[in-house]
Image (tube, rainbow, N blue to C red; front, side, top):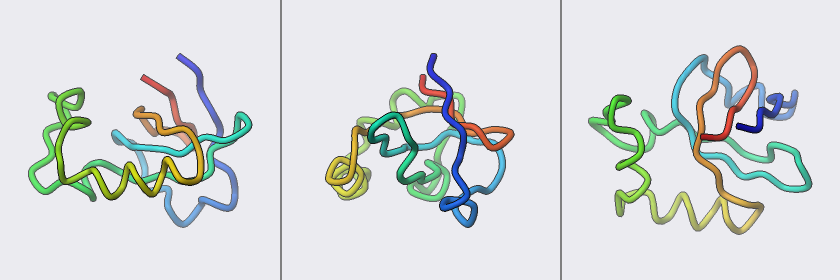
Length: 82
């Protein structure tokens, strides 16, 4: 599982540990959005099924316009792809 540091440019987006969607370009984290902020009622124990939630379509479209979309875990100022 690749792990990327959260760059200083995304410091305002970092809010501790959690599941997130990210845009990755040229091996760098470009954007980061927590699933708990995007999906009301998000269940971290069932995170894999959340990726198919239609409510994420606009977010996935945004992220894919700036990089490759990845789902992963955020912790300790790092994003680990799942």
